[in-house]
Length: 211
Image (tube, rainbow, N blue to C red; front, side, top):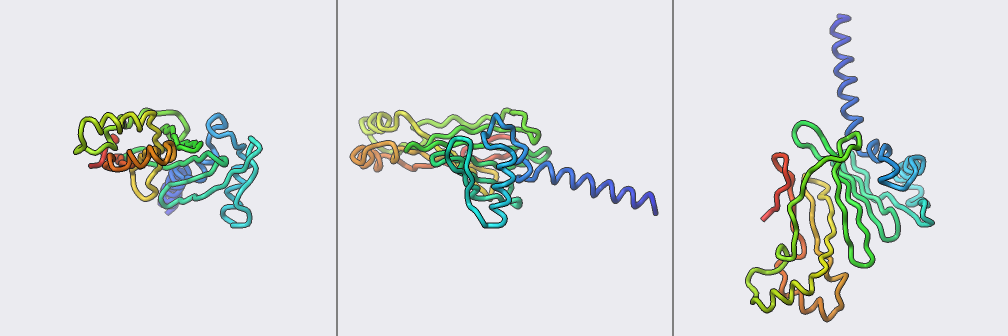
């Protein structure tokens, strides 16, 4: 009986440990300060406020405010407005053996541009290469060569915003040309595009561009 009880407690403890490692809240709180300039005590505070729904923002270390938009343990997703123009998304991915973390930092001024990095659950950077994204991913394949040249000019520089799909192991890459261009240039570019966003899915330990 004592042996069975020991085995049971060991299993429960092990599962609790794994769960704690992959808790999106705990990962947010343990995030190294050199990645996120919000002190851990402030992170604890903003999570508590988010749960209690009493206060929706706190002051950050840059004379601005940050707001926790979403913290979902079921989907392993967290979204934070780190400043008036900045956003961070954190998502736990499962590759079938070991979970890993994706973190997106986006700045919008006014066009949004993102940096995405991947980490182990103890915050060591890992390689999870994304497919290269170019103007051709957004330009229609049926336009004339002259219009293709025009579209490439209007899409340069190419500003891409990444967002995690909260519900799935995928992310969305959105072209922010509309926020960057003048109204006249956007109206020229708009009919030359096949889409303003593409989806990348994590399958079989690699990122795949969805058709």
